[in-house]
Amino acid sequence: MNYQETLQYLYVKTPAFQHVGQSAYKPGLDNVVALSKAYNHPHTAFKTIHVAGTNGKGSVSHTLAAILQSAGYKVGLYTSPHLRDFSERIRVNGQPIAQDYVVNFVQQSQDIIEQLNPSFFEITTLMAFSYFKEQAVDVAVIEVGLGGRLDSTNIITPILSVITNVSFDHVALLGNTLEKIADEKAGIIKPGIPVVVGEAPQNLRPIYLSKGSPVVFAQDDADSNLPFELLGDCQRFNKKTILAAVRLLQQKMPISSDAVVAGLMHVVELTGLKGRWQKLGDSPLIIADTGHNEAGIKLIVGQLARLSCQVLRMVIGVVNDKDVNAMLALLPKNAVYYFTNAQIPRALPANELQQLAKTYGLIGKSYPSVQEALQAAKNDASEQDAIFVGGSNFIVAEVV
Image 1 (tube, helix red, strand yellow):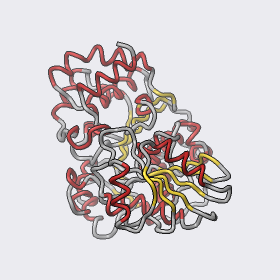
Image 2 (tube, rainbow, N blue to C red):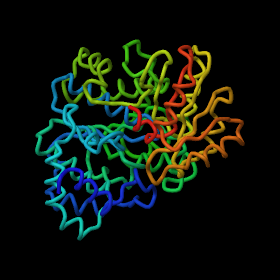
Image 3 (cartoon, rainbow, N blue to C red):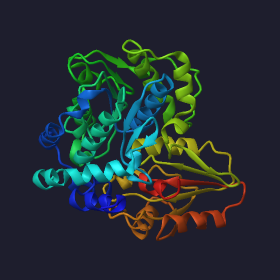
Image 4 (cartoon, rainbow, N blue to C red):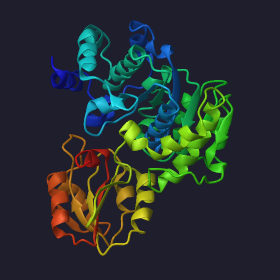
């Protein structure tokens, strides 16, 4: 098999949550523990930092990796989902995993895939750990896939755990209250291992404090005046989380203040991060952001309200297993909408989204592809307008 054939084999044999949604989710660690044993527990060959949370964990993970790279360490980074290509999920010092490694790993794993029937995320987690071991990384930043307690990544014993925040997302799998979701996220906390919690209201703090580890609540810190390359409103909270994590890491490994500044200011170049309030064009201004749940959309809407533009044009698409109504209720009614859908099975069809949006006073046309919707918005826009592209990782993936 070549690289594309290998990916197709994985998507068919081990369906990905990214493509099919909840049916791909396999809670529990039995499979990943068996996989880890088969590969001689590769995650024990390097230090790890574990990052969970509803929103912001991608930005936090990438920026911590950028800071550690700037400090001179060889850094693995495992995140999900990818935007353009699978190889984005597994990086070493910002460079995507080699395609040959993906092909060889899957070919050598076919027997165990047939035997254990792992999920896509389970087998790719072991691929990441094995690649990091082969590459002899000093430390790897590991982003939780979904939840925490039962996530495949939770076989690691990190030197630091990070939980960015908790809000409503994946409620069918994680629970329908913030307390239940927080407890699932807190499942990554290991006894005695310090944890940074980015945002935590007072009623959730006992959940984190009950796990037997020292906890730092980053939101209690004063705002830092250090510049940050990432510009979304959410990044103010993420920066506090990152800097609190760095302070704890500095107790375990040398990280200079210069490395912190360099990582904050060059995270995109150092790690390949995309889709976080990313400017795609000027005149008209075009912005893309991957925020895709109620809490993320709320921050985006606040930022859009401060844009200086004549007309705000929204290229919007969603997946069908999100709380679409909660998102639509937040979107600005004075914008012009271009409803669309990504080319994945989970996408809510553009015409259905258009009809649902009407009930919230959001008016616009529907388009069968993201590119057609964006082109229509460009055609309609003056140089003084602004175009926003988002609603889903998958929408953003087709334009960045």
